[in-house]
Image (cartoon, rainbow, N blue to C red; front, side, top):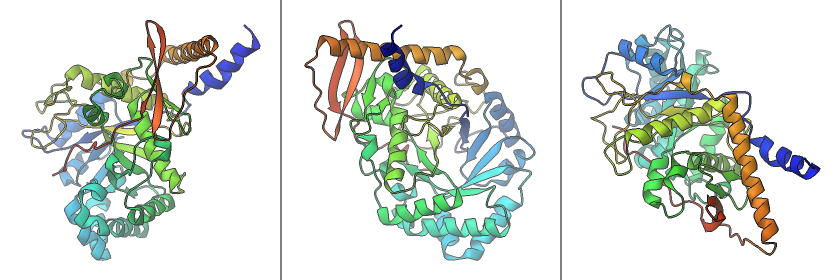
Length: 410
């Protein structure tokens, strides 16, 4: 092997090797469903999935008690309607923390409080109250000297971005509100939480710019290149996650961790939904997180996700179809256990092989077509996909507009 080969290997292939720190996989435990199992039974179901984190959409006492003295970390939530009261009176926030957190802590391992649900895109009337409510809750935690153990954040839809193409140029709407919010997260060490639904983006794109496999995180050789950063994206999930990281960095806050508060693929109720695809998507997301690989833009930070959802919530309206790992009778929608999804050395080797094959194909193409040029505009990207005749290079709009919210959380 000559020097050229090893230079290509080191510069192009080696960066795809996952990092040493694995990410974490959690699950969203919503309870807008009929005939749910008891919270005690839910704890055992969660354990059977091998996940270590659970997010709930309130601070229900029976649920908090059920998770006491377990190793499972709990993320709790403040409903949107409660935000104004928590913002206008700090004693209200102190009373809420005492009754909803301190009463169960530390036996119940609450690690994060999410104030509201997609407030900046779905709760215009309570938007002005959001940051003050978060600050009041954090102050109450600080008074109890548990603010280092329990972080305060809020969830966002991808609609908070004012553009989605390319990821490196993304920024936020509502700058006057978002910038102070980012300052708060940076100061307190709390994560930026975002809901990512690649299914929604693919439904809007209808295959015009990328195949369904790109949204499902299935490695098929299809790659999209950000024309500004030159970063390569082999799936839509990482591209959308990096769009958020870029938006935060473009506001000057590169120290904030991004966590995915909801992601999933429906198993029924919508065109393109199926049990097979839902299983595939969730498994690919979990493997990605557990690999510790990070994102193309932020390789040194493991990915944290919460799969949506634990149960098929038949009383929760959704514009995206029905999600769930379990039916409410405790039978599985499909097999899913993160302990069986730990990436192996074979998967690392396959990652190296695919990357090396791709770069060799591209260089051969350049040798054959020395005069080939790709003119790249700021709002466009280049995708590479293998065909029977060699490598196909497509110049196109990187991503369509993203409106990836499931809908209002009741």
